[in-house]
Length: 140
Image: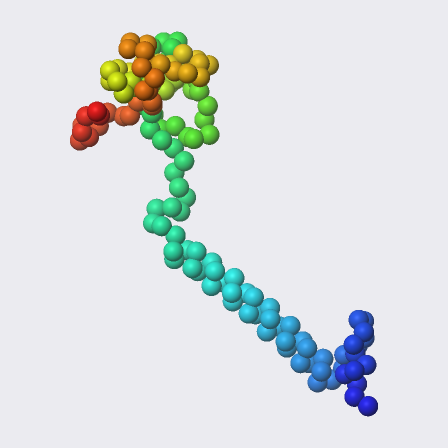
């Protein structure tokens, strides 16, 4: 009588060479799984675009304080919300400047308004004001 047919039920005790083979099979499956995960991690690291590790979550913005009139540029974290603390007067009055794409003027948008238009020419073509750079071509 073959003992392997008696080991079909759960909870039966495997003995001898059969138990050794079953244990080796489980160990080999575990090693293969660890190897596959290691290969996936290696591929992820190798195929990731350069500069994407620890991506900088900041962007430069032109700011103007509605309390003291301070104007300057600062790197803002994406998570920060306006109004920001002013570096001059320490009040929450710094807002990002916007630029009209029609008349090329910079302005502070009204707080809480959703449909923002240029206060000078009433154009709806407005957006965040880019930083001025001596090497950059003028915006059109």
